[in-house]
Image 1 (tube, rainbow, N blue to C red):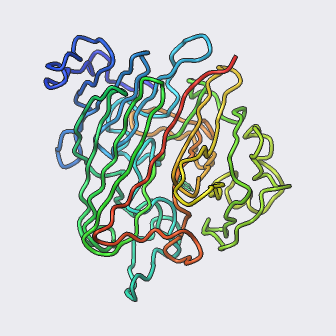
Image 2 (tube, rainbow, N blue to C red):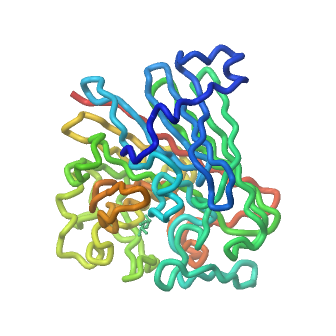
Length: 382
Ligand code: GLA
């Protein structure tokens, strides 16, 4: 995370009294601390929670957007580095940055023409991305204030965030109660678990939009990172990034990441799908022994620092976005993130599923619970 004005001392948190009583105060990890992080335009307070595990790995999450703000993990020499892009107060996020670290909902990714039919009723959503609806509309879950509850188990410190999305919000039917639980495990993994229930049939696709840069220095781009994705197929898109419905083989294309491959190796290939990106902005169809199985979706590594991140998920798809729209324009308090200095690996259902009966369903009905699990596992190589 780049420093943008507020000093770290200014963010020094107060250990939560419940956890203090349980013996987690006084800076002895593992623990959770809360500190103020600014205000929404409506004047509501935004908090940031710092979770620290036994080895000193630290993750910070704010209540605006249930957003992952920073994540410090060691390199091969034990030096801690922040491997996600973020800011030092809520202000740049309010100024409209593209989903840095945010929880995305009610529907992550695109819905064609911003419309879908469910049980014979047509729903119209905001078109906030050309002709399509992206990431929940004009004011998705990334721009909402979540309530937060810290907790601690023997696995490590955690934070449970809840947001109740009103019936009809951003055009979606049904009141949706969404819950995201982050837990920083003492084995240096971070689990992100989603749950949701609804009062009327609706569609749901929750994900996290963190931009990773394993170098720990956002001045470096991510083109030298090696990526493996456990997928034989991907979903090709039209020029507005809506899937055509085809599941295309990755073999022999720039989309083949079945073996560790440098992100920069084919990112400028003469290929129509790459031109549409421009670069990688596609959904891979993960290999699963059965739907919903928890499997390794991707492994990302930085040969320089030796940092490795493995992503495991129950989701059927993975959107790999190579930071193509990062433009280096100053945002918020002057922080600049240049082209392709971060990449997103969004565990998810496929884009435009509400309009594609052949894709795994994203429909949630009353009486059922939506559940999705993702784990980011950090380690190093020599
Ligand atoms: C998603 C989309 C991208 C882009 C980013 C935000 O990952 O797939 O096309 O909109 O969000 O810039």
